[in-house]
Length: 522
Image (cartoon, rainbow, N blue to C red; front, side):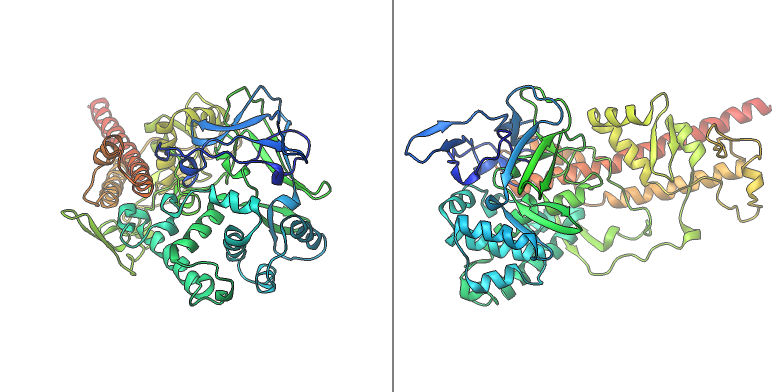
């Protein structure tokens, strides 16, 4: 979502877009459809005469490690203003259109022309912000100023968008574990089209906004994947900034953005030292899972540290109520889902021995674990470079754990038994016990078996990780949605395999300690 050019305020309306269609398929981590149609972007500032003058800019559009995006043209220090775009040159929708935001819209109308009264009432009404912005974008794409019609024409087509709402019922089975959510999203978008945007049946049919469902899906997915949000004076604001939406996402972002109401502008600033050729990245959300990134932006992050597996449902029931027919790879999503296990029935692992077996440290309950010998900050940077390590930590954090031993039905579960009063860490908390009794080891191995069965049920789709990886390598004719669905399947299956590997390591640790104990007791 960032922008990029000179430090002074520059009117986006004065820029020319030189578009060159790209044939390269969408990359794994690009925003939805980003690198397909936007092509090369050359920016030329137009003065009042017919001549054009090139502008010296700190960033440019180009190919980044994440796909199509923005790149730094030179070395830039932290705090450099990369962009300042006047409010009149962007679409801005506050929760409440009053006070200073009335002036913002007046500036936009003066710059790009007014809109019909019916559309104005809808934009400033009580509907959801994304529906209001969708209506505005649809109208601008057909009837807006030259700038906005040129800009919307340069955006990816609906067939290139990969948000979950873009997946048709025929395409949804490709998503496997996300198929149910895609069905919900697509159904909501279809209902919104028929009730609001359709030129034939919608409440706004007098505006002739969308002749087909694909028109509405196009606009809705662009709003989903290219909209900024901010909070100004306790007011939530959603906005679209042309060309700024080229900025990619990274959990290790190097730039931030903000609305500067005093300056009447949207600004993007670097927050780290940037070298020439660095990709300009912001965060779309520090806690976004791949399911959420796929839903709203149409991509997933390899080794996403926020991903978790669900171990709360019954492991012997089919996962998420989905019936699998491996022969034809057909999946039917049912409305019903397995009943959750009762608390006492859920398998639980002991935190102390588990961390010891895996060579980890930290607090599982607090969601903070990292390899022994590393600080939490070092582990953060290590995970950014090593997706496999990130998946391992995410998988371990998914496992059901308890700090003290689970209750044993024929024995006592006194806290004093498990927490010696003089065994404390430097932070003043009880140290995690890593030694287990024979009964506890039996109980832990039984819990591991249950969790392994659950992992196998999560894999029960009739396809393998290797088949998906081969598909991405060998099939050059995959559509953008087919390719992105395959990427999502690969990431999910790798997370499951990381959990299986961690459980197997813990099982072997318990077995080895049991054998060693018998030898020492002889």
